[in-house]
Length: 273
Image 1: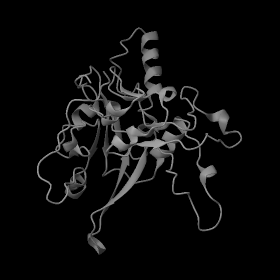
Image 2: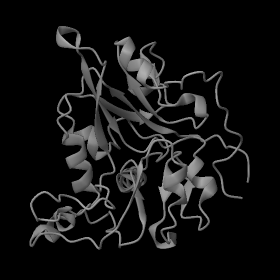
Image 3: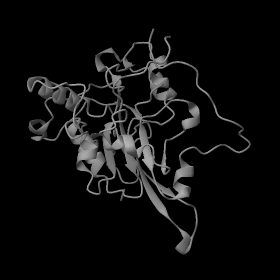
């Protein structure tokens, strides 16, 4: 296993929890852009049974509701969208026996190579963010919906693990467009490549860009005193940042267990070798 590598580009996002209304537009846009089939075929229609327990809803981006646990007028809630964290030191990569997931050296996105995946789900077990889902069924689309599928995103077969990839196909398109225009594909302007979730957010809660590029807004946002990341003590170096001026929200990001002392430090990893 080789040591962690630094990348010239590191795509990341900042999600402003104080702006998020929990509307779910990001999830809908993600599902549509990445050809995630509706899950009605998994629903047992006998009254009272609902979803079979073995199924997990197929979403690459899930919105969670948070609460401060207080009652009455002191109660406060927040919404936390959770895509793949695109970790700098991803635990999922080092455990995959099929090299079906890897750290993209040009952009730092954690890839998922579906033809290699045989569904062992080791990556799901190792991901501390529960950002991966297993595809239990063949994709079934309502009649006519197949005409609206995104042509540049593959439709996955049954038996593989899926996850958010920051709409990687959009990045490939943006790079090709830059080359055609005689521009540097590794120095894209901020609006040249935007994932579907950020594009669809009606409240502007999701900001996307190269966290290493001073010309991109995320470069400034990640340096805000109100910015935090989930479970930083694990040493995974997530590239999804959150922002909130509410202290109780920021404390949710890295809660310690009772009597837990000091950080948990992950060793080198994140690369096959």
